[in-house]
Amino acid sequence: MQPAETYKNRILQGDAQEALKALPDASVDLIVTSPPYADQRAATYGGVKADDYVEWFMPIASELKRVLKPEGSFVLNIKERVVNGERHTYVLELIIAMRKQGWLWTEEYVWHKRNCYPGKWPNRFRDAWERCIHFTKQKAFTMYQDAVMVPMGDWKNSRLQNLSETDQRRDNSRVLSGFGKNISNWIGREMAYPSNVLHLATECSNKSHSAAFPVELPSWFIKLFTQPGDLVLDPFMGSGTTAVAAQQLDRCYVGTELNPEYIAVAHERLREREGPNLFTVKEKKRSYKEEKQVLVNDD
Image (cartoon, rainbow, N blue to C red; front, side, top):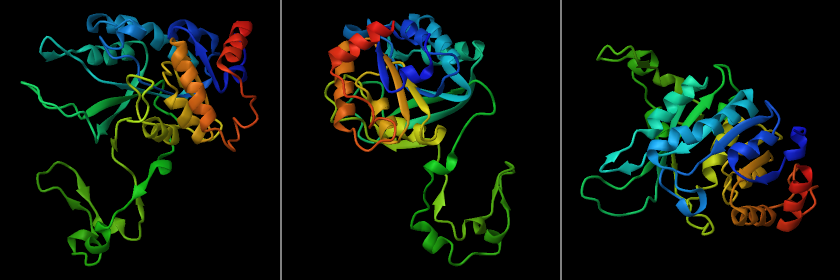
């Protein structure tokens, strides 16, 4: 096992569980990934059956827990499959298994896919959202909420002009829920904290991977949970979307990927976007064959 610096801005080829063993303990600030969903990507990743999914994923989760820093975060983009006419429970079972392994199920974000695939099904509507499950190793974790603040919107221009007497104090809920609000607290604010629903379009331009998510998805979590120079891991790197997002935001990346063709695509995407980035501009550009040879020599 070599120092973390050895693996910064690198994509390691191999099965995630085995490739992750090369990374040092507590060396990663953030993990963002979208693993193969059950019964999908069979040609590339074998198509893990829904009933076997938890058993397949948990050894990988153990390695992820080892390499993640105590204050780090793990964001898992995943969605239940329909099996025999009903939603399978493997995602829920996975959450329970993760908690038994020592992870904290800290939060759940929803990715609303604004341009989801159209269609008609006899017993359900089109799938317009996916889970982004946030796991941590401890209650106190790194989070930079100000980095993802959003504009207040034009509503404040009219709503905050003429405040009533109730708007200027805490107005408790009429249904005795214990919730309340003070509208006057919004005066003078230009930015607000977002909700846990992310409204992002799906990836349409990346034709080299069967299930690429948009760069904006990992970018949002990278901004929320890391700072420039931090190390972001994607154990199912695919065509390199998480690495591209990290590079654009002056973070370092590391990834593992089974398919060498996807690694080649990822390297090409990274080179196309390579600019005056503090952590990539000094690296020597290598061809895919050269990079692969370096990894073999490192082993």
